[in-house]
Every structure is written in structure tokens, then in C-alpha cells.
Image 1 (spheres, one colour):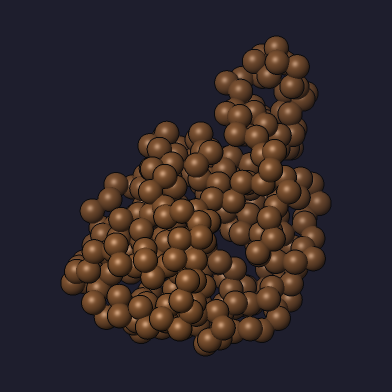
Image 2 (cartoon, one colour):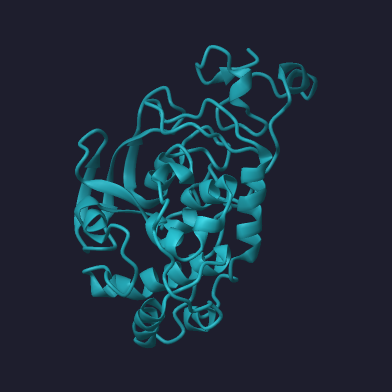
Length: 288
């Protein structure tokens, strides 16, 4: 996956998390309590180091029985796609921008809303031409499904941790929609990517996510992951964060007066110090 030169998907750099679902313009409009960013930071700190053998990390995961799915509700994982890295774009658009090639963006969104691009789908090995609004070509998959996470530990979490989990780029991939919907909430014991060449990376990512969040695996799930990773000794876990060189981790200015005093005004969505709260008319430029 190619890095984004100007936009981080890192959770470790979170200051405040937007909590609205994916808006038509792909931008966030509200802020969440710091508890979400704190949960995300803790998960990032707990993630296994990039390059560590996934089989080694798998051996550290607890093996338990599956908890009941009683009480599971998608809404318990936050109100849809949010804006974890405070760049003004929701997670869905960030992942599309990360995973597609040749992407184009909707005008007036400061390279936020992806309208076209090409996906080399890891699950099917198909090449898919994505067009925003077609509703049937590309999904964003939770590699460790939300339902699976519920049955292996997340039922006991608070809302902040579940929201961080649902928007963690470590656990998200742009994929063929039909494959994603076939997978549903399945674990590795009952579903693996049809593209065998992608299975090692898929298993390694599941192991990394479960380790980062302290989720357990069932015996069947453990054995399935172990079998996959046995075919690719040394397969590394992916990096827990993706911070392009030079990415700013500056927290938002408290108001326009502070931005002007720092000589940073006007601010544009995505600039260091940006906050949606300062953009009263929603045009993407604050403190004009």
C-alpha cells in the first residue's frame, strides 16, 4: 500500500476524534471526548512491533471459547466512519486514498473525498475500477470483524475503545465488496481470502490487530491462523501506524485568535492546527 504524502492514518498522533458518520462531503463536523484518542493511543502502543514474525505474536494471544453475541450492535462501535487523525476526512476516504491508485478527488474537498480510483483487490486478485456512488464495487473491510471482536473480548470495552477499534487503519482494507460481504463476521477458521497469495498477509494483520487490542482467539481460529502462517515462515506483522515523514502532530488551535497569534491564519482543512469548530461556514477555510 502506498503512503499518503500529506495525510497520516496514525492513531498514535490523535488529539481529538470526530464522531459523526461519513458525511456527504466526507468531512467531519463534530468532536468526541479525549477518551477515544486515549484508547487509540493505548492500542497503538500495545501493537506488536512492525516486522516481528506473526507466528511469534500469535503464540502470545490467549486461547478461549467464543463469548455469546448477545447484545452485539454495530452502533456500539461508534456512529459510522469518523476522523481519527483530525485531517478533516473520514476514515473511509482515508483508506480509499491509501489503498487505491490513480485516485481522483471531489473538487472543493482538499483532496479528501475519493471519487475514482483503481483497486488491486487483495482478496480476489481482481482489478476493480472504483467510482463513488456505485455502491457495489469496493467496501472497507474490518479485517478482524466487529462481530468477531465482540465474541473475543470487545463486549467488555467501553464505547471509546470500540470506536477507536472500528476506525483503526491497522484493521481496515479496501477490498472487493462481494468478498467482504461473503466474509461477514467470520474468523479465520471459517473464511480466508479466495486469493491464496493474500492469506499470509491477511493472517498476519489479524494477529497484529488482536494483539494490539488484547482480543483472544478461539482454538479453531488459532489453529487456522497457525496453519496459514506455517506456509510463510517469518511473515511479519504490519506496522501499527503509518506516519509519513514530516507529518505534523500539532493539536488544533483552540480558536482563531490563537491561530492568528501564531501567524497560521487562514487555515485550510488538513493544515496543522486545523479544527472544524473554527470553520463556521463549512467551506474548508477557517479564520479568513
